[in-house]
Length: 239
Picture 1 (cartoon, rainbow, N blue to C red):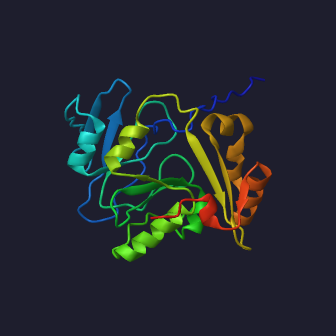
Picture 2 (cartoon, rainbow, N blue to C red):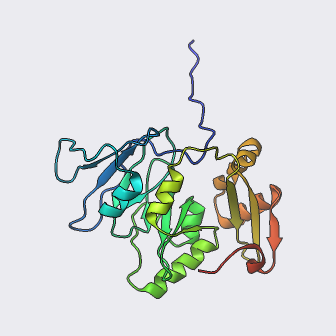
């Protein structure tokens, strides 16, 4: 009997998104764009909302220039060397080929918060696991969302272009920091900080298999996390 084979999972967690269209714009008048970015620094864009045939723009424009001119957003994910970007207006959640969703927050100070959330974290943020959410029209409500993202370790970027430019760079990500956060119902917070390489070697990603936040913080504790009675001692919660 032939032995079934399985592709070796990619060691680099923060690799480029596989070429799969994953979202239809939710607002009237919005179009879905894709950007195919290669590590040879050639970027091509296509408007598939207006033409069935691919119509490519400049071969040499860099991704941040295109993102700025077309107001696109970027999400990194599994894959080899391609990525897709979507036109704004201000998606709060974005679904791709991975489980969970890329979550964004738009604070009043400017820039964006970005975090790829698993189902438990989406529930913590009170976001639907299956349907797109848009940013709040009320800025105070959006800031509250950003605060909750900070409670999960979300990273702030000065712009969408800055995030895309960094995420699409080809470099050794083994030393990149990774943070896991769990919130017990009894109070306080458990935080585990490590690196991509350590998380891979120890299988720390199993934390994301938790069914709920209670199970999540217990696994974080068992994997060497630190408990902070005062959450501000363990997390930067400034929005």
